[in-house]
Amino acid sequence: MIYLKSDAEIELMKISGQVLGKAHAEVAKRIRPGVTTKELDRVAEEYIRDNGGIPSFKGFNNFPAALCISVNETVVHGFPSKYELKEGDIISIDCGVKLNGYHSDSAYTYPIGEISQEVRDLLIRTKQSLYCGIEKATEGNRIGDIGYAVQSHVEKFGYSVVRELVGHGLGKSLHESPEVPNYGKRGQGVKLKEGMVLAIEPMVNLGKKSIVQERDGWTIRTADRKPSAHYEHSVAIRKGQAEILTTFQYIEEVTANTSLMIEVNEVTIA
Image 1: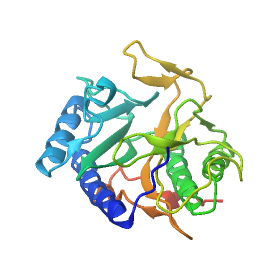
Image 2: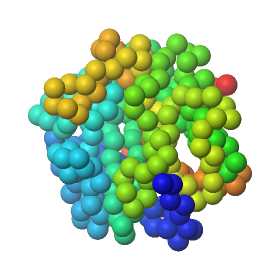
Image 3: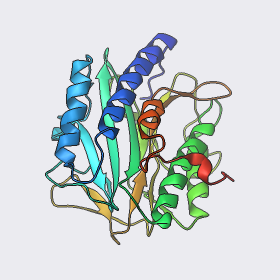
């Protein structure tokens, strides 16, 4: 069942999204070579709880942490660990916050120090594709319009969209209907209505689309071990223009003029 949210509910989700955005920024402040991914998870959970929230992911289907931390060829659902980040890595941070009974969900991928231009372009173009999808998340369009916008943007650069993992509705539950694939055909799928809230989250591989699940039952990596990027916003469906409920503002304030910054205007969106 798809649950339509009232304006009051959407406002509560936006407040949750602000806490989530600031938690992301606290993590971003500490991303550097030598830091462990487990330390980043500690920072996020502490900030969320100190600000009245609950980490949405921790305990969800027995997931053990506040953050999904995915490095290099890991697509999503990586566990925080004693792994120390190193120059040339990329790291995807996916986080959710439950506040006032409602969830928010967003993700951001960072370069660690100097990375190749090929991989930086992957990050830039994946982030662009998120906004391409959001542009189509308006009343009267369909789920397929969102997926087509993401897919058509990244595939023209030779990248692959992961098929098995998708975005989703959210609200009082972290995962609600409908599913939001990052591929599709225009004019197909569930019709979008005002009051729907969706997590739109392109997961894009530098190489082939095939993925592998590791033995821990959670971690997903690319089959060819080439890098993967992941960006995500929670958005409310509106007439004319989607309302983004999460924010990258605080991330971009703390990463401005650093190697962590990924600007979507570095490559023109076609």
